[in-house]
Structures are given as structure tokens and as C-alpha cells.
Image (cartoon, rainbow, N blue to C red; front, side, top):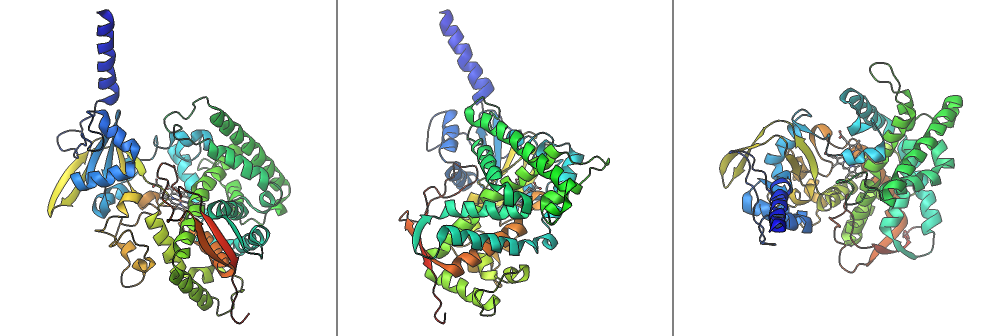
Length: 491
Ligand code: HEM
């Protein structure tokens, strides 16, 4: 009989401490307690969420409206859907909705006291320094460097003869080359690129689905990640030391140079380990996101010859008819159609399925449902979530949401200008700092690629689907393309 009692206590404890949905108070948003997909009490909702968070969020929006809470074990995830509800997420400050705690699992990658792990005053200086490094004035000098890297890469890897390759893999190799040149500087790009690239891969492969829940799990991937960070610190410390001795090693335009001059408010310098962490953080923020954006944009355009024709016409126009003219920042800025294509690719396939903050206060949110206003109070401790993936496919905000339509951003329509509707780069206080860099980098690469080559998708047969289970969402399948050199009629 005793074993039965022990079993009952274990089951009750499991339910009470791990599975029991936490109620949020009388004005809290509706709590999702049932799942039509898995009609099993308590765990059905959790199973539905892990099966496909994206599909579940869309289902809950239909069933519960723009604000609802999904209980996942002891956590409550409160979703805000649509511009009205999302405005609360983006207008709140760090004392109301915080990122701290949410990204703790990145500490072994970035290192101690870097970005989210740094105390508030240090974090502000670090973010300010990153923002300075990504200002338009600095970006101007990057276009020529990205053009040089892109032309060299295409010459070496694609060549003059027709061929076939995995577009995502190729654009990933090219993106890290261009990012390293701009962010790390000439010396790192010239003599240490292979080491940086290999260490970055080890850091990246150390981010696994279980990492957010157990960042220090003693697995081979985590051990390799920890080793790679230490090696990266050693590598950058050497570069910093050599630059201090020979300032001419860098032309001073890269972001590492800027970090080397940065001091905290009390006058202490940013340490070599922190500088390395900041470089890693920038690479993580920009590598997958930019390479996936260029891949999706290319795939959407390649599937519709009218898009490529319009893009090529725009190139002729901004380059004054000289298709081999070197690019500069102003010219890239004039490529509005290409910009709209990238914006639209990111709307249809955003890189993040969820942006998350933790509520530090009871947060009221007023929304309209069925013509009626309703106010809910999100309780302290909730994980508050917006989903770019689900919300940018809402037909109320983006008509015909499943159609690739870059003209929705053109004058007269400008659907992205509805406040807090377009979430490709987040929004509010923590919107993407690298947005201008990313547009400049992706547009420069695609401008050259599409002027030089005609591309056609070979596999998969249908348009690739999104791998929503990945931390940064890319195509699920390999994207094999055929390419051949573009021939101009009067060439
Ligand atoms: C197409 C490429 C990119 C996309 C789609 C993208 C997307 C985003 C999004 C959605 C956020 C908001 C995250 C949140 O609210 O939790 C974000 C933040 C950020 N991004 Fe990007 N990003 C891109 C490229 C870059 C690049 C190239 C850099 C830097 C080199 C960068 C640096 C940052 C930083 C530092 C933040 C944090 C801002 C903060 O917390 O205050 N991003 N990005």
C-alpha cells in the first residue's frame, strides 16, 4: 500500500509544482486550458505548443482574441497579437518588461558581463558603443568592402561556367566574409578569418534546443562551445595587443577599433574578454539573420521572373545604365524595389518566431475584440511574447498575407508604416541596431549577384518551408539552385 501512497504523492507533486497552470488573477488574459489537437487534460496544451508553436498561436488568436496566455509547465507565456496589443510590448521600458533572464542561456557564448549579463550601467555603454559602430556614417565605408568580398567570392566559388549549388550554404559563407571584413577589420579578415569562422561554428553548434533550459548541460557540444569562446578571447586579445603596438594594422573603420576606445562611465576600459564577447554578440545577431534574409529574398525573386526583371531595371536606373559601375552607399540606398523585396521576404519568413520579455510589473493591456474594448492585466512574472511569424501573416494588417507582394511598402500603400505592425526587425526600445547594416549588406550582395547571374530553383520542387523549430528560422530543406552568367544584349 505504501508504494501506492508514494506514487500518489509523486503524481500530485508533479502536477502541483510542474504542470499546474498558474492562474493570473481576476483581470488576467484568457488562459488556454484545452487543446483540440491533443485533448488530454493538463499536458495537451503543452504538447500542442511543442508540436507547432506557430500553428497553436494562430489557433489561439482565433479562439481567444489578441491577448491570451499559454501555460507551459510552471511558466505562463502571454501572447500579444496585432498592432494594438503589440504596442504595449514595444512601448514598455526595461523596468516594465525586461530582456534579462530571457537570454541567460547566451552567457556561455558571449561570456560574463557582456550585453544581457552585464550590470545595467555597463550594458548601456556596450549597447551605445554597438549603436555608434552601426551608424550610417560608418556604414558608408563598408559598401566598397562588401562589394570587393562579394565579387571575389563569386569569382572563386561560382565562376563563369553554369553550375548548381546550395544557395543558403553559399550565402552563409559570403555573409560571414563580409561581416568579418566590416566588423572585425582588415587584419582579422586577412590572416585569421579561417580560425574565426571555425570558432564561430563551434559556438553556433553549441546552441541546441535544450540549451535555453539547461545552458551548462555537460554535453560534447557545450564543452566545445566553452572551449571555442576561450580560444576566441585568446585570438582577439592577440589582435588587440598587436593593434595597440601597430595602429596601422586596421584602418580604424571596423567595430573592434571602436570597442578598443570605449570606456565605462567610471573610466575603466572594456576588457579584452568583453570586447571579444561583443564581437561574438554582433556576429550572432547578424550572421544567420542576414544570410537567411538574402536567401529568402533571392528565392522569392527567383520564383517570379517579373520580380527579377523589375529588379534588373531598377539596377540599370540607379547605376545610370552602367551595370558594372562600383556601388556606393547612396546608390544602394536608391534601390527601393530591392529593399521592398527584402522587407517582404522578412515579413513572410521572419527570422524569429518569438520575441520575449519578462513582466516586472502588473501590465495593463487594452485591446479591441469584436468591436468591444477589453482591458486585461498581465501579472508580474509572465513571459510576454510577440510572434513576428504569426502576427505578420494577419490579414487584418497585411491583406493577402500569404502572397509575396513587395509593392505593399510602396508609396500609396505603405502597410509597414502602421505602428507596431511590421516586426521583421522588432520595434521600440530594443529594435534591431543592425537594421541599416543588414539592408546595406544584403542589398549590396544581391545587387551584384543578380546582375552577374541568372538563378533558378531546382530543389525542393515546392517553395521551401520554414524550419520553425530552429532558433533562427531558415528554410527547412536544402535550397539547390542552378545558375548561369547573365548576358546583356549590348555586351
Ligand atoms: C536581416 C538581418 C537582421 C534581422 C532580421 C534582425 C532582427 C532583429 C530583431 C527582430 C531584433 C529584436 C530582438 C528582440 O526584440 O528581442 C534584433 C535586435 C538586435 N539586432 Fe538585429 N537583425 C538583423 C541583423 C542585425 C545585424 C547585422 C546586427 C549587427 C551587426 C544586428 C544587431 C542587433 C542588436 C545588437 C540587437 C539588440 C538590440 C537591443 O536589444 O537593444 N542585427 N534584430
